[in-house]
Image (cartoon, rainbow over all chains, first blue to last red; front, side, top):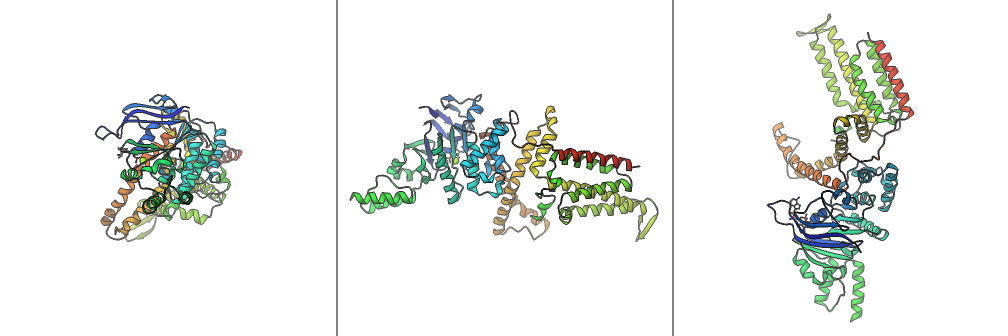
Length: 279
Length: 265
Ligand SMILES: Nc1ncnc2c1ncn2[C@@H]1O[C@H](COP(=O)(O)OP(=O)(O)O)[C@@H](O)[C@H]1O
Ligand SMILES: [Mg+2]
């Protein structure tokens, strides 16, 4: 299996007087893996994403994408395989209409017009926005704009998709829309996906969870094992999902035993059943 | 705020004028603006006025709406008229009121200049009423295309225009939000002396500017992430296409100009 993203002893800071955001940082994400990166605000998550597609350049160390070292001369070429969705739906919508926005990335790559029209249709269908081609951004909800942002990225056929807190500015409904969109994409395509979030609910979709704390990897684990060390997570400023907190209280005050901590109501019910059966 | 936005604001439609290629419309309007200054007798003025009125009818827009759209300019037109009426001292005296004399030449001059002004504003507003801002942007980019050879950043300018257009509603929303927030803190923009009001605008502008800069920075990053690196090697989704309607319109327009020049003296 190929390594999609690799950081080798990366040092990065925003300017010379600022402290290192990343210090001797190492990370490996394999092809077609779905990874969550979580951590408190300012722990360096966005910095990692921007370094990975060359929007920022490290002061020392190497960043490899699909085994190729990222340099000033190949950054444009390598970036073509990486799609990135940012936090603010408003500030990444370039086009005056949905269609124009999806076209933007394709135009930049010099895709012929006929092919563009086909891809715009397909990618908007993927995110359920095909009937909105002529809509202007100010008539769309945050969730819809963010779906368009995902479509814009998917239309360029990326091998790696970076989502930097793509749901954090959305209402619960918009958040649901995006998560189900991401879920569907994962079912349909082979793609390496990195979801940066500080919402612990979102990690349900992932194979692996990396916890960041002050520019360091605090823990590299899976969803099932993440909450075994819930005290640690709380101590680095992460708040636990309500269902996890409830499960912990049940363990503490009554004799419940959870094998894995539930992340939503459904899982919670299931966990309650199995934990009851054990007695 | 909203009524202010109506000046020449695009009204979607399917009239002949709406269907013309935006480049055709731009060329016609641009040359018309120049030609208006060549009118020198009532025949030539009449001919241009007739042309403008026919254009108005062809847009199928309500005339009241068009005239209301240029409301802010009515005052200027009237002002121009009065100014020329008073200043021009040619021809026989028509009326004399408390030291002011109004001459025949003044009336004539006032009428022609304000008619000229009116025609300019009317025809230009027809352009923006029947053409979406994006179409205008595309047309400008196409028409100025040759200037790329002498290093005029035509593509960049057009992109700037389209991004500005895209963010106008966003910034208007934000202005409203901020002004409401400030009003709830007791900042009053509606009463007080002019000086007080100008001071009151500052707490509105500062957060607006800060957020606009933040948006610009994030947008630039998003554009770069999506592979934007200038016009080179770029293809375009939006494409303009001259149709037979445009050729017919152009031929008629040329005939109108020829007749116009033969009407002058
Ligand atoms: N443009 C910037 N200029 C200077 N410092 C920055 C900039 N962006 C982020 N930082 C700093 O770098 C650190 C990591 O930020 P970031 O990667 O955005 O964290 P996260 O995405 O996890 O919230 C923070 O201390 C933050 O203040
Ligand atoms: Mg961040």
